[in-house]
Image 1 (cartoon, rainbow, N blue to C red):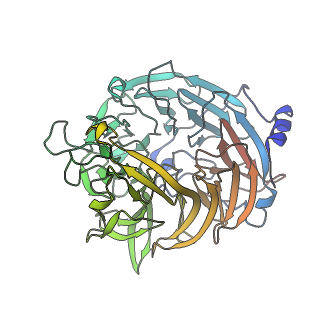
Image 2 (cartoon, rainbow, N blue to C red):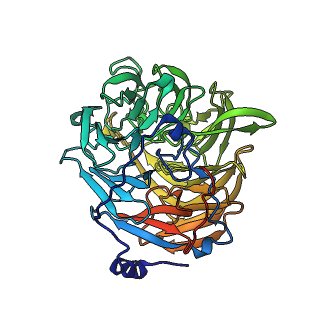
Image 3 (cartoon, rainbow, N blue to C red):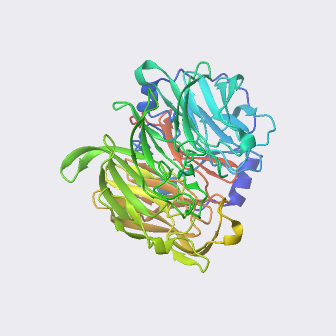
Length: 530
């Protein structure tokens, strides 16, 4: 089945696109238990649950019937911005964002319930990943680095606090993470900023008052000898309620391509860190890219998996990093269990005893250029992966690529201080066996990559997108296409799924449109929890 814009224009005339309608729906109080173990009719966090697996136990849509999937409704934002956010779903209401805007939409019909617009501001409007919800309050980070709390019922503002100084070059786009160690709610937020002399941090904020509870800094204070700045924390992390550890990835050091002014490994940039949720103290850190000189941050989702690893039960953390390596760590201690490349990589001398890649000095940017794999965009980027516990596959939107990196003395020793020129790259959805790091299957999604995240389900269907603007349903066991629908533009976010009134929906976005897909004429009993 292929559903193009002509079909969607017919849907528009038929009233499938909705802009406003009254509703008496109200969000229920969302607890830490809901966030850890969401029911089937809920997607209350950026990743769905705390683990980051983006895997659903729903089974109504199967490899046998997914070809019948059709459009249930579509919602047009009319804002001229890509939807990069993951919607939240609580009590039948979807909440999603683009910069400066939040919508509450009826998840059954696509009717708008309310729309909030943040006042005009000078922040960087590069995109927005979404919101968090706790009790009956929404939490929204703004382009000018403020955290706003709103009433989920009507979008009215409850309070607003500054997270960082936008005039210095900070900005925020991420969806906050809500945790509740020792009964105290924490809204965990991170920051972004590409200028020198800006350091990243995580901050915990009291959801009731907006007061700062703790802050963890990813680098030493500005001016510390032989220390870099950078280490931004701009993507949403994950959380283990039993260990009470928050897991986060940090960004690249600065200056970006010129490492001569920042000798050493540049901790804790390009790192995966475990932070004590109640105190903000560092428990452990692992650095995928020591002394990075290629702009390969490590902010990609730290996926939490409990299971067997080489015959021993483990609490694991998995990440496909931008630098081209797949990592499996023991998330209790930070010990490396596996490091393996998942595409062409040529910038290392091997792997050290800690499981970290060893940078090759000959592969740093140079005036006459250096051929590097992957390119500056990395083997993957912010798009969310998925982990399917039934198959043991880590499924990721990957970007095998080659580039030439230059150092440009005229650019000085700060800032970007160089250039990257892409030579070749393509997009593939890869399924990695976490026991070996080997690629089990690969599905080509087109030149330049798809930009889409990944969602897997217990029935064996994986949802994602391709570079031509198609929504895809793949067979989780082998990557073969089961269904596709043309949505007019590539996806820039990750699919979600939920079940309401016995019907399973899959929600995707393309351009400025949110789409909900379901099987026609289905009315069954709920099929379980996510």
